[in-house]
Image (cartoon, rainbow, N blue to C red; front, side, top):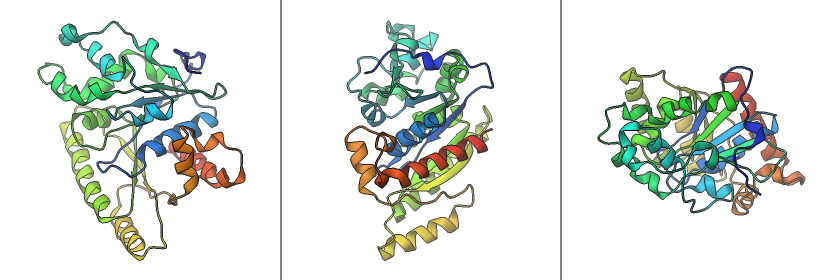
Length: 285
């Protein structure tokens, strides 16, 4: 069901594609599920989409039906650095790009793996800017010419991997769960974003918006925290909240997107993700 570099990813004759990253320091906010279904929504609109799994946990890769890949994005990033020739592996980008199981959509992925957790140590001694490894990898492989959108799922940390994602991204989407831990995590995330901006080595990505996820407003504390966080998020738009729906959990458990279901109980979720995809296209046009 999965194949190598797909026909859908031939070079585009139009403008360059955009890089969209899903980030949050806090884990458990549904970031990977949001990235997966948003990528699928973009492909449903006819866009050519590449997902890059930049989380060593490789949960996005799992949603694509991949597990324990021998070679993955970590090896490609190291291969892109001449200074690390001793660490190079015999693999090229086109061999690692896999297609989503549904052949009717333009959706590919570059998988991740546990070795990516050692990325920071691997590049510690290089002379090239360590913050720009991912950005330059995307440029060297002309991925923006092959795809309309590149959707990146980042790790729940604020280390070098996230800095690389911030430097490579055109736009950011920040899923969060309305609680005190998310409030604190968002504050730290904004500080890292400001640090990247102050580096001056690349343009800062645009905050496309914040996505309240797994929201259950029947609980008083959730409503209170949501209101407080909403008042503090003055650096980007706040999207309609995604309720804590069993359908989203069910789809992810079966390694499917909400668009793989044709029943009416999934219709509202599909509409939400399509609206999100539309917003991404408008803000990054």
